[in-house]
Image (cartoon, rainbow, N blue to C red):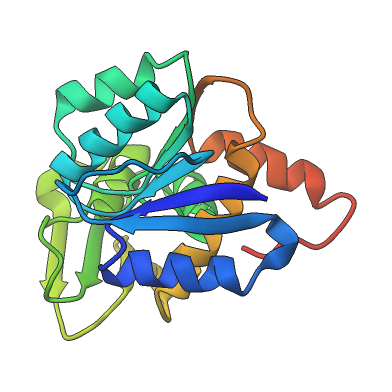
Length: 229
């Protein structure tokens, strides 16, 4: 079994990740510790999963490097210097994505195709998240906008109740309108994907990995069996 530390264990995503790991013995993962940013950490582990805060993510990364463990970071709104630091990592397996859902990654690929096919249409991106979401627009919305070359000012957003995450691209032409929507129904979409990525990451050589790397792996695997997004 590969030992897992959850950084930000008391948060909604941290709790969901712990539950999914407990429900997925086939992935050979076990949670050995849960912590909050700033807490001491003496346990050894094979991987640390972070859904906490920008400072907490940096803390998790530093701990992973010190202990030569894999590190999965799904925290958003990270400072640019930290993003560059992660991209240069070559001593541990390190995964970062502002959205760890494989389904959302494929949605982004669909949006890129749509933007090409409907060249000349006016594009607008709208996102909805829960009221506790600290960054606005969200990291996912910024990433999707970047994929289709949409300026940040064309992103609108709402914060409503306990919405896990909804993203809508509208392409407006002279005589018609196309809307493409991805709606997360619950946080398990992200937690389950994060756990599967962790099970994959802990077996990878040192280096920096993103959703495109994991997507290539799952698409190759899907030729042999069904893949849960």
